[in-house]
Length: 319
Image 1 (cartoon, rainbow, N blue to C red):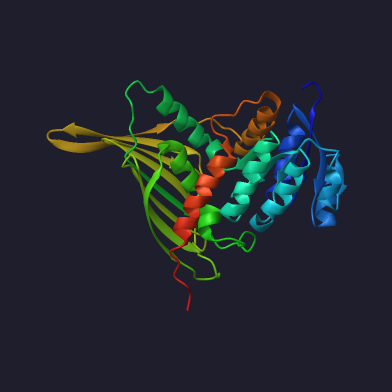
Image 2 (cartoon, one colour; image 1 turned 135 degrees about the horizontal axis):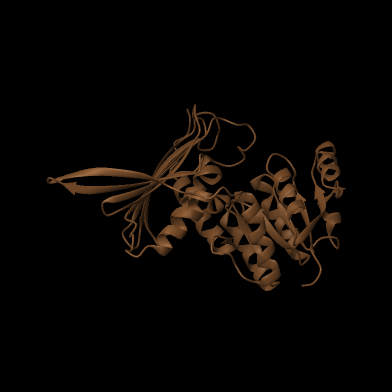
């Protein structure tokens, strides 16, 4: 492909405006159009990046080769399906859609039209995840993951409550567990509660995989303080990833005088922009046909959503 890809962004609110910024900076594409339900917001982003504002996203057809869909989850299917139907590649923010049936429809449409359907599981591009992936791939002695612990907490925010805490927050860690363990699911146990919304606000889950590894996940969107921590446990050692501060600690338990004593060191991580790298991976996937190792395709997005639905199904309704 000799000419630069023309890209558009649907929804330029809190996250979408950053998609626009990263496309604008990318040398392999140019930001042609943006669309938003707010003319003020849409025109502001269009003016900032010298592109066209569309009140109706459908008018982008014929003007763009690829789009980011950065809208509430309940609108993912409607908008992604429209662009796939018009032979336009799609990056849709996680989760892929709000239910498995529509997610499968998107998968089939992308496959039948030979299009890229890229799911924005951004945490895979977190510098900590990138670093630990390289560390585990390059270790001479194989580190076998036995257990994962993930904790994801955030204060209440009115912006992203169209789905439950499982589909909104925990799905990041569901996807990471799938990414690292690469095993089918054996059993799911979960406990959920809603304290402010009709859907779950707090969830804890214990996942057992077919290879007998386990993962304990906890998500809370009504917490006082934010936390994004991901831990990988193996024999006599653990990697602790602070995904907020982009810090990794490696703890080994060393036998000394018949006692196990912990020895911890900080692991270097690169200062990288996760969203910028995700956008690069999407554009490169379209141009070369090669999928980045950390990219999430539609099948993986559906796998994460299926597990999220199982976890969400054990629901304790607020009285």
